Image 1 (cartoon, rainbow, N blue to C red):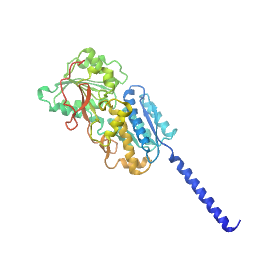
Image 2 (cartoon, one colour):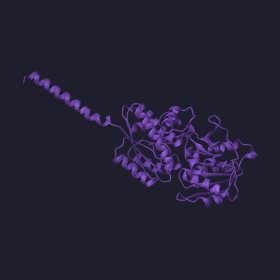
Image 3 (cartoon, rainbow, N blue to C red):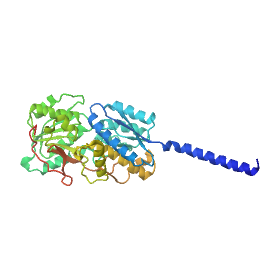
Image 4 (cartoon, helix red, strand yellow):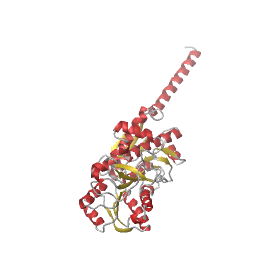
Amino acid sequence: MGKRTQIIALVVVAAVSAWLAAGAAASPTAGPIKIGISLSLSGDFSDPGKAVKRGYDLWAAYVNAHGGILGRQVQLKIVDDASSPNQVVSNYQNLITRDKVDLTFGPFSSLLTGPAATVANRYGYAFLEPAGGGPKVFALHLHNLFFVQPAPVVKCGDTFVQYLKTLPKAQQPKTASYASLDDPFSSPIADAMRAKLEKSGVKTVYKTIYPAETTDLTPIIGKAIAPKPDMIIGGTQSVDAYSQVKALIQANYNPKFLFFSNGANSPTEFPSKVGAKNVNGIFSCSDWTPTAPTSGNKLFVSEYIKKYGGNKFQIDNNSSEAWAVGQLLQLAVKKVGAIDNKKIITALHQGTWPTIEGNLSWDANGSPSGNDLLVEWVGGKLLPVYPKSFALAKPFSPKPAWGK
């Protein structure tokens, strides 16, 4: 073999080696983007947990049908945490260290989000989460956490308090009872509402925080209604909200005003659990409405109905929150140009991000700065009623009798 031939052969070998090396380096990134998620598919939070799953699944299916992210398909690795804080820790530990997921999304509830985000933070993962905005979550001071809703949950009842102040003095409630679940989401909402209402002259005639394991709320509701309050405020999740309603029906007590922090804001689960004729006049809070002129909202509503059926007023806001988490990830990845947790965290702490949940931004602890909506069951539909700029119906009181 001549010298010239040897040189050509060496160049070819080097080129082939470089090509093979490049291929080997690129092959891991050519695979799917694996996103690890723990959800309450069983246990106390299974109703909202399944609604969150519908939102995540819908988003992934839509993204994959439209080219994926950075040309890669999205693969969701969803595991059941049985509504347990201990199990959620194990789940994220395994998703990150054993399954080697690229990214993590959050679970349902503040009770689970705090410990889950702590695990993700330990490994440097961004933690975009749909439903964990209680004060104890933000008190962890986790720079990797982003609550993908317009307001921290402690502000859930603010719009209801504001609405009550718009009523003529004679129609405003004079007395109130507060029954709250011992949960980092639920009881802080009722406590914040009580403080504001007491300042405005509403007398507290009963208050309690009941243990999470409480299944029979009849005795508690019995004490709450004994002073015959004008208003009952429940710092609730889901199952206990249903139980409070059933106990009120059994006692045949109908307050003029009834507000639940959670449970009553599910357009699908609530009427099925308490009876469709028992929902009218009940208030709750919501972070999303199907008619909001927010970025991508029409697309989400259209895709949801196409996949799951029903109409826009039957979409659970837990599903919209989950879609918004995915939507936010897409925006962040587009900004940084990579699936890089550190870069995603840095980017999200800068500027404002347009999602179906509104234009979002966060403080250093992942807490947003906006406000929630007041929703009420009107004519069998869960509708935004306050503030007026978002209202689809006029709020009304007093609450009609049970069964109407």
